[in-house]
Amino acid sequence: MKALHRYLRWRNANARHPDVLAAQRKERARIRGEKGIRWGGRHRLAA
Image 1: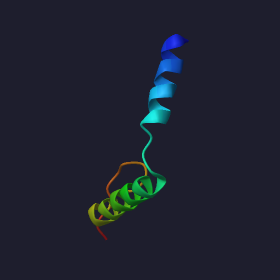
Image 2: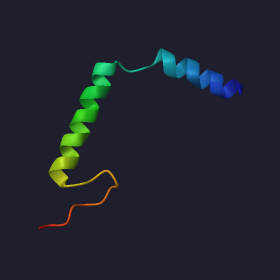
Image 3: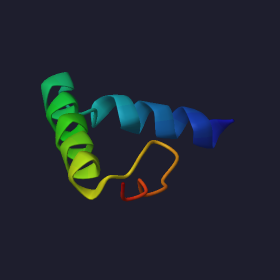
Image 4: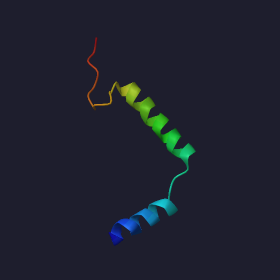
């Protein structure tokens, strides 16, 4: 339990800014779209 509290204190102190997280999420979605990867991790079949 102490380890969990220590981690939570560290995580809250080192949290990333929400705008940075949103930008990273958007970039990952763009890359997934270019590669044709869906949420399940599978490539789209070529039509």
